[in-house]
Length: 87
Image 1 (spheres, one colour):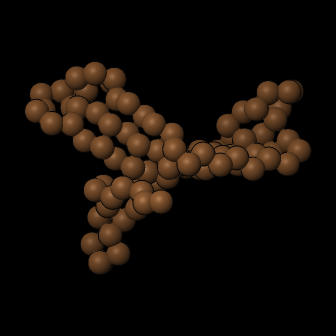
Image 2: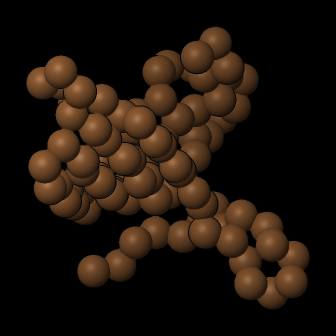
């Protein structure tokens, strides 16, 4: 957190949860906004989150987490950090 002027802001959108018994999956499209220390402008990054959960002893615990950023399919495979979701 020391690399940012203030704590980054994370917004969870399009949260969908599917559960059956003691297993659940949660997916969302999240937005991270922050201003790096020493920078004059901040950035915004959208990314997909998938969580796998299990109910163990009555508590839901995250047993798997995956976050990903879309990539350019032009052969460069660079992260597409400038994308925003559409409806």
